[in-house]
Image (cartoon, rainbow, N blue to C red; front, side, top):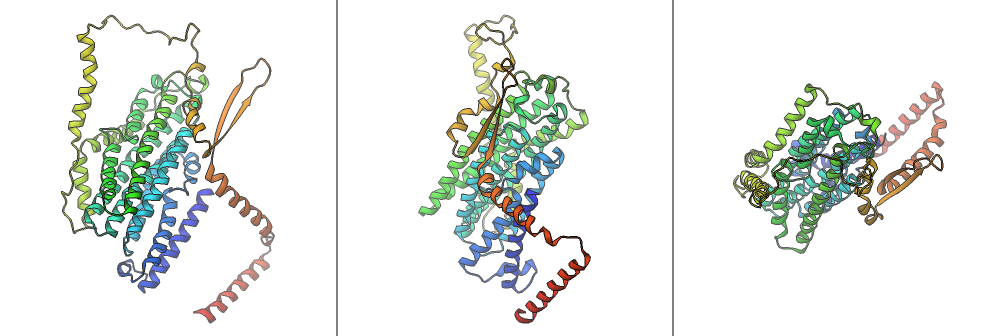
Length: 490
């Protein structure tokens, strides 16, 4: 119902924007919208309506609250379809209709600002959540923000008539749309594997699943590296192009452009660091260590091969798209050049991902070379329990999901409102600690509105009394008002 309400708000804004554009064009044909004769004020108004209308469907901040609610209630394959495909349709529609408007640099500033906010707040709540599926859902808000950063550079380039910046921005946005569709679909389906095996989404109850689900664990590790934008996978490749776009826009003359592009670079940098922290917490809590709740994990086992096969394909795409990023960018360039034909395809250089792979392999080999040269002890490795200062090691000694993010929750307590519950059945019973994080924007923005709507709906419920003659009367009164309006105003 929350998603339905936000979707209706977005649909209303979208319809108003299209009706206004149709009135200026004198036609409902989209082909006639391209030559709209409107000024700056009306262009900004229409652009804002399109952004709210379609950004809300894409999970843009502050309309992100439906993401964890809807995704967690959906089956994992449906969540993968929603995140990997559905929100991308909204993004493509936004690009399509926004390109029909007269272009101004302010369009880029708006997208850069909203993209930066979506990045920061999306990853903050992803980091704080103890529900691994909700955390992946909040990460969709973060990645939509990253896409908007690329689109911000693109629309800024169109506004200042710089085809190079526009081309780079669109390539960066489309590249990250492609990558997000791959690794986010993979993560949601992997979450389905974990839930099928354990029947819980609570990270504080899990642990040690790598021994029981090794293939799922390895694929999840690949997806986590990809979404954290670490080389040489595809997430790094698209964010590298976005960084190049932000730097190129930031060195342009003008205080406003430098401010917004610098803000975008800072937001993207912080987001990358926090994404590594969020998915390190998720992978470590679910797959490493030992189970915190043995009942959830004791019967867990690897899913069937038929369920692992498409996940392996997506994981290979995460690797392949990253390694062959130059070919992917060349493909995307041909698409974008249909929008911006004023520039050439080979406009900027890319890093060589194979060289990066060689450097990373070299860095991985060097420690072993030093160990060999320094006559390291080559005796057989002894496997034993972790050292616990002389005490018997148990599951409560390992770092949990809450303790992993405890310090950052304290530092961001003005945003991350959380409450703790302590349950003790008796003096000698074990204490159970639970912690729940509240979305500040849900509490301050959406909850009061929903409460007001419920109160009003309860008051006007008297009109729905089941009497057919009254319903016929309502229809008659409505038709009379329509006739009166049509007579005087049409």
